[in-house]
Length: 407
Image (cartoon, rainbow, N blue to C red; front, side):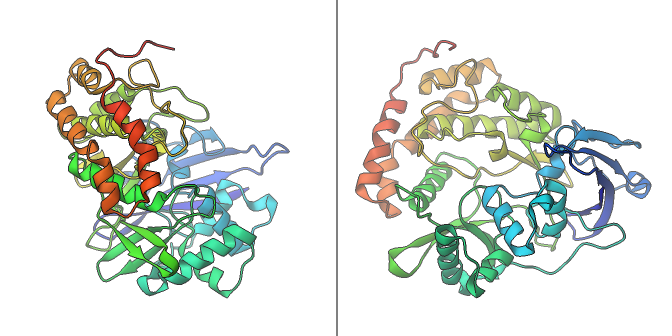
């Protein structure tokens, strides 16, 4: 049995214990029972809010689950994905029997994204900032390259292990800070077939031009012609606090394999957002942009809610790229198909869903994405890489009006 306290850092910087988590020992297949409850003090606190309004309402009693699946998926949200988990395991020397989610939550010690921390019972969460500095960027990039290549850990890697255990995703990255704030640094991978760093920077710029709310970002040049993409964190507040993060995967209780539509996300925003009149058009705009750019990796952990004094609101858009994997089909369905319609069909969907200004949103997104080759050139994407994706994007921009048939 492993027991952890669940602490929450509020936007103004105060820390409160929100609850308690207990997880049984895993069986031979790695499965374990788990339970969470809010503390009485938290339930009585006027600042309290549900960590997941769909699955963890502010009520006394236990919420029980299998592993950190529904109704406890918001707790799993605090963990990184493949790259970050690997670094956590290496940093703390966790044996195979201690690599399940509860052990990783404890090891992370509150240094992840979002507002949750999971210290052992009776201990306060750590307040030390493990983020590296901009001066460490070259060292971090080289350490990430060597760790990915040979799996060994040396002194340089230890800086990466301390700074890189937090963000989600399976690609090399690290947290760092400078005098302008805190950033997620994204590095190229030795497995890359195209300039993903440049393509993501260009995609973020196109998204800004299309009217999406995106984080501040910039490219940093490194030795040997390499580059790193710095994306500003949106979970931190100017007061030294944090915004609680809730993935749409958790909110929609989409564990394991799922088949969901963009319409399901819009329905969730209408129910749970503190500003649905703003967030529904924002999500629709992101859907249109994804469809026209070819961002097929539109899974539910690429959509988040943030909590502040207003309540839950949609986060800025991030992890935007053209169809790098050549999958063509999107994770989320457009009405009944994983293949999106063209701009006119996307506008029809917006009208069907009651999105104000749908036609104008589609026109703005189309005008922005049509400049893909120009913006890719501006961000130094090799000509061959840009041409590879420009063909697919051009096809998406001229697709016929009619919506695709259901598969």
